[in-house]
Amino acid sequence: MLQNLWLIPLGFFIGTYGTLIGAGGGFILMPILLLLYPGENPELLTSISLAVVFFNAFSGSVAYSRMKRIDYRSGFLFSAATIPGAIFGALTTTYIPRWLFDLIFGLLMIAASVFLLLHPNRKNELKEETPNYHLTRNLTEANGANHTYSYNPIVGVGLSLFVGYISSLLGIGGGVIHVPALVHILNFPIHIATATSHFILAVMAMTGTTVHVATGVFSHGVRRTILLAIGVLLGAQLGARLSIRVHGDWIIRGLAIALGFVGARILLMAV
Image 1 (cartoon, rainbow, N blue to C red):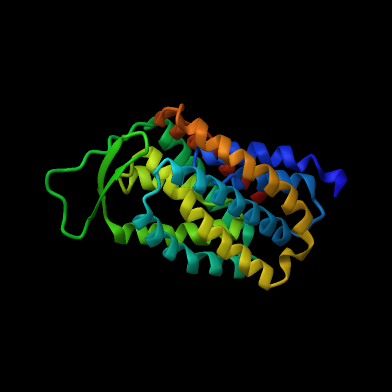
Image 2: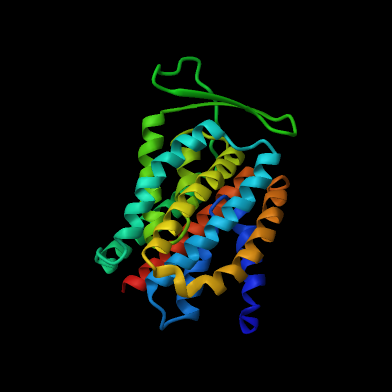
């Protein structure tokens, strides 16, 4: 284990940046693992990445909870939707033609990156008249900032189901998809979106990791996961603190860069 101690600072960086943008950090870790361990089974690396995402999301959620930024009602609703998707994604990793899926998904990620770079701003204003089927939320952060927003819960559940599946399949966490969706489709304020996304990621990643453990895939990745987990547990606390000082627009731009990075990485794997 001593020769792998460098995984701790790597985990610290992943935890800091992943928590800052609410993305879990798997989009950084997975390509690094693929480069570092070219001879390893992709299923094993996916299980390691997903387990690290859980520890990152758990630590970040604790920090965001103290800031009162997590929308728990929406978080529990969306978490429940990610669970079947995460289970199905973990079970079908070996059965889907990966090259075709990677090609389509990579193009979608890059398209989303371009969209967010061109439209980083999103005003979250509650309309005077909201549809009866919309869910209206009112949250007050620990610093006194108040947020009122409304969204369609059916759309949110559908998105979360998709995110759970994709996250578990690729081992990338899913926040790079969920946060933009929460902001631009469901009208969440950016800081509430990143915090709530982290809470959802903790549930989703734990579910996917449990499936990997049950199927025996994870057994050879325990030591590396422990070292990475030490780093992300500490880094996530720093990332949450940094989020107080970073403007929402810059968080969106960070997400856009992350999406472009993930999309490019996936396309390179597909060709």
